[in-house]
Structure formats: structure tokens, C-alpha cells
Image (cartoon, rainbow, N blue to C red; front, side, top):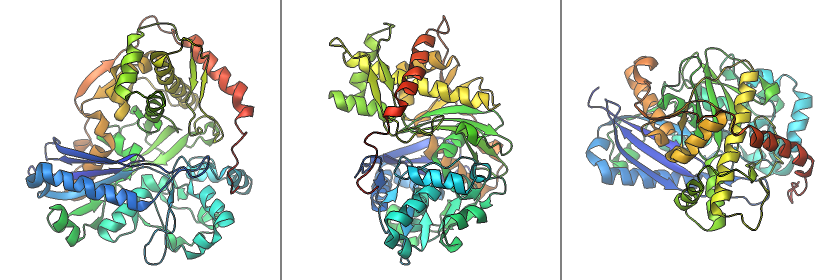
Length: 496
């Protein structure tokens, strides 16, 4: 076991990321390949599955260049990926159209219909109807692309489409299945009631396994091309948020963290299923048997920083440096970070980003700091919603690409008024967690033995005096309420 190697692959929204981990849980090599999201109409977000596969081929080639000897010792692969995406395959396994992603908001009308027809949806599936999830997307396809549904024979999530290409198996884990909104969360099986309401043939759905169970083996021809041995096991895996939780050991009751990836989440592990759909919280099955979590899902995170840097024609590093140079200057700008709409707590796909308070003196540093604070205020609102649902948050870890910024993490600690912990290699969270699931799938070890808390890199403590952001946060909340009626303008796509 000490010489065994485990591979984690994360099929993200903006990139595929890979990490090789040895028996001591040391990262031996990493690789990533970026790709784009298509937005053919306002509110739409799509990617063709070929894009993910091309990126997987690229990262595997780079891993072989970096660490061929280690790669040849791989015994298992774990997969994590962006949640909620809908891939439709025909009988031959070909994708019938680009996948509808988690931040696709075209199915708002269908959500209202589902809410009226299935009042138990939130209680069964852990969250109320939202455009991100499969029931609303399938209803939209039925009304707008019935020819696609007529030819559909299989439904898969993004990482599981990659799994199918790797192994020929159509399988998903409990956590990613939870994100379809077709899973009966308490029973951890497909909900016959919801599946029937969506007009879905149960034969279209992938087989369910726990994230730490074996779910297939790598095709021999791929093993040869990538430099892996034959017979490599592929674990069930997890949605990216739960995989990130495993990467930092957030598996016990009350373990909490936030993510700063393309989107943001605030996650708390729970020992049982605790739905709170009235708060727009997600209560989903965890990647490990007999465990669940509550999550506030925010559709905007580090992507807002990327957006503003590109808008102003500077690098992300340059934008952060200009923001840091401002020091503790008073905040005069407010930013609503709803570039992709918002889920928790507003469930408002029509919401949009707003920079409020611009003057001729507004510069790159001021605007960047407003964006960082705006994401922080949305996380503060999410934390308050989780606590109002009866789940206290005393201390948070932070994972994702945005955690590389000390400035941002300190600002978040100040806004949230909670200590914020960054672990070493925290930006590799989901891929590393997937590698841990790969190990569990072949060794049978206990999750507690494998999913240990990693070494702390730094703890960001709230600055004194507390409450320095209270006035700006109150203005942030008021600004959304005032603008909410205006957000629906311009939201109708050319296809309804």
C-alpha cells in the first residue's frame, strides 16, 4: 500500500485538474487544462463533453511527462466534477447536444410549474426547484427541444460522462446524484415520484454507488496510452464540493468550509439528512456512506475576480496588488456579485452584477476591492442563512483557487467575523479528495484514517475592531432588495 499511487481528476467548470498522490498522501505531480463555457443566449451556459475529454487527454499527457514512473504505479482513479450538468446521450453514447451546466438559468418558468405540481420536491430532494437541476432542465427540453429528448437513451453528469469514456460504465455516486434533484436523499436511491414527474425512463439513469466504492476499471487501451497499468479501479467519486470536503477532512458533524472557485459554496457536514428548502439551502448526500451535508450554493465566486480583471485589462495578480495598495481606505463602492444569478438565499436566476457608487476617481484597486467584498458579503448572507436553519458555524476552512490571495482571505475573515483556515495545497481540494476516494475504493480503510485534516498553512483571524463592515454589509442587503424588481428586464432568451 505504501508504494501505491492514486490519481484524482476534477472535471471542473473552467478546467480539468489532476493530482497524483502516493501512499503517504504526498502530492507527486499536478496538471491542469483550461477550457471555456459557451453562453449562446443570456442566461444559458453550456459545454460540449468533447471539451472535457480533450482536456483529460491533455492533463494525462502532462502527468506522464512529469512523473511517468509514479503514474505507472497507479492502482485507482477518483473522479470529481462540476455538479448539476446534464449530458444527454443517444443509443450509441454520442452527446445529443452540449451539456446544460449548473449556472444555466433558462428554465425559470419550469421551476414555477414544478413547485406547483410537486410540493414535496424540496423535502424529498433536499432543495426546492431551481433552474440548475435536472427536473427543470428536462421540462425545458421537453418544450423546446423535444426531438433531443425523443432520441435520448442515457442521462449523465459531467464527471460521469468522462467515466463512461474511461470505462464503458454509466455510474454516478450519491453526492453527484443528489445534485440532479432526482435522488431521494434520505433513502439514497432514485426517487420514483420525481423521475416519473420529469417524464424520464428510469433506464436512462446511471447506476448508483457510494463515492468510496469501486465503479469500473480503466479501458486497457487508455491505460497503455496514458502509461498506467492494466486493471486500474475507478472509484465512484463525488461532486466537486464533497470531494473538496474529503480533501480537507471535513467529514465529521459540524465541519465547515467555504470554496472560492468559479462559484462559491459554504458547506457544513451533518450526521443525518436535514432539508431546509425554505432557506434555499441544499441538503445533499455526502460522498461517504451514511453522511450528508448542508450547503449554501452561490453561483459566483473567484469568477467575479477573473471577470473584473479582464474587464479592466489587467492580470488577476495586478488587480489584487492594486486592491492591496489601497490599504484600509473606506469602501465607497458596492458590488452585487450576481453575474450568473444567485441561488442561496435568493433563488433568483434573474439577478445580475452591479457596481454601485462609481465616480471619476474610481480606479482598478477600488473596483477590485469592491468585487472581493461583494463576494464576501454574499458569503456572510449565506452563513447567516445556515445558522438561522439551526447549524452553527464557529470556524471555517477555505479551499479553491481564490485561496491563493492572502488579501481576500483576510477580508473574508473580517467580513464573516470568523477565523478562516487555509491548508497547504488547498487549491487542489476536489482533485485531492477524489484521490482519497480512489484509495478508499481499493484499500477498504476507514474514512477517518484516510480523510485526515491536512497541514495548516495559515489562519486568518478577524481584525479588531469587529463590525467594521457592518454598515457596508447592510447597504449591500438593501441594494439587492431595491434592485430585485428591475432584474427581470432583458432575461427572456430568443427561444423563450
